[in-house]
Image 1 (cartoon, rainbow, N blue to C red):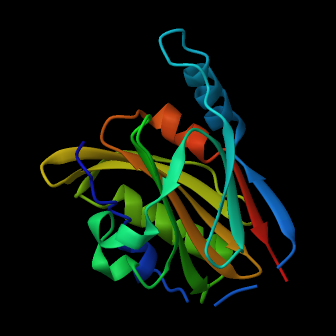
Image 2 (image 1 turned 90 degrees about the vertical axis):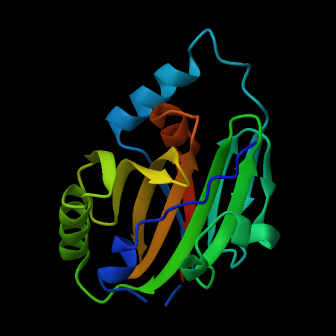
Length: 197
């Protein structure tokens, strides 16, 4: 099976970032993404739902509840992500069955106001000629969902992501695959929990 390298948009790094904090905050997809993910999961041609797992970042500040058989691939991160992401990477899991890779980057303290960051991120995504199939969700006070496709090693890679701000700390959570569709990717990001101070 091809190991597609996750192409987390460099846009996130360019928009002004960088530190951290603990309290339990649950984040879920917006209604349209939830409906789409539920429809996908209910498809008759898909295999039965796997066991529920809770994946926790290495800094214990973020966990994601998923269905599947995800395994930690953080030790082989250089096979999966670009070297520029290694210092920020706090979770990297792959499910062979669904061929979905899940990555969490702790990008540090946000240097601008959240609404300004989300506007800049949306503008950057929509004007990036190296990505396609772009869809940006409506931003809330602390999160914005977005998705896109891009060429990676000659293969079209689909990514569904959440930019999440907690106590002025920015996380990027992305599910990616060269074979799974956006509905399956969005379903992987349905429940995200962050520990705040």
